[in-house]
Image (cartoon, rainbow, N blue to C red; front, side, top):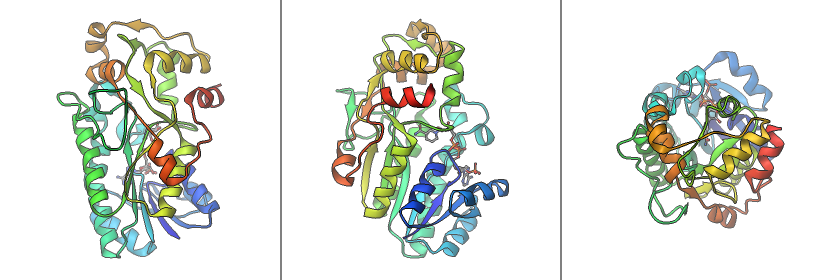
Length: 310
Ligand SMILES: NC(=O)c1ccc[n+]([C@@H]2O[C@H](COP(=O)([O-])OP(=O)(O)OC[C@H]3O[C@@H](n4cnc5c(N)ncnc54)[C@H](OP(=O)(O)O)[C@@H]3O)[C@@H](O)[C@H]2O)c1
């Protein structure tokens, strides 16, 4: 198939494009920066520059590539696009990403419609943001938590937009867990090494993790099978922060994280960090494994962290 990967130069795109190429697909992949065209070509794709927030730029790039499938992997979370990671002010940190998940999604869907493509696969998020009611592990039936009254609220609204717009158009949305793998955990490991990433309160809040290569493999299957609807693309073991964080520190050769009460963490780290670590809900991958025939190379973060962070 001819596959158009919007955001092919990001941490996931860099693992996805080679997997698509290895399966015999012809890939066009985008970056916003002409300095990265060579990098994208080296992944095996035809490289193009495109601004996902500019309808004309998206329309032209898609029309020229004439794809059978469009994959939306555009975010703006890196230092280059968003400045330093800032969970306390997540609304500011994620402002560009939220636009790419709303306006960017709409531009891609318009471009897809213009060339008669309904096979669209888009990135969503299913790390710790499951609905904070009932059990610790959520299925695709559960909407993501609105995180009302926190700086994560605009981000969750943007996620709902991607999910509704893409599935309404006959496409699929992949709720990836929290990424780890090449180039994706530097922002996390650095504060863990400095003991600036504490376990907050009970640490009962759950997170689902996913290795980039497993996320890419599920994406290839979704592309090839033209599936529709929402899929949780996470590993087998959603886990509480009190378990994964000390283990991550150990794998990274750091001292154990400190523990601080929620009342103290709230003014220091903000509401989002406290919610994530005390009330977060993870996600189940049963549907993706069953329907896509997806087999994980890293079924648990326990094995994955050991290999990636050592
Ligand atoms: N589920 C998760 O845990 C998750 C999901 C996504 C990202 N992250 C994390 O966020 C961090 C940064 O991710 P990243 O390295 O992939 O970088 P990123 O800055 O989020 O960029 C991702 C992709 O989107 C493209 N992009 C950015 N702005 C665009 C725009 N206006 N129009 C079109 N494309 C645009 C980028 O192209 P350029 O070549 O121009 O930069 C890149 O290809 C990493 O630590 C990663 O692990 C985590």
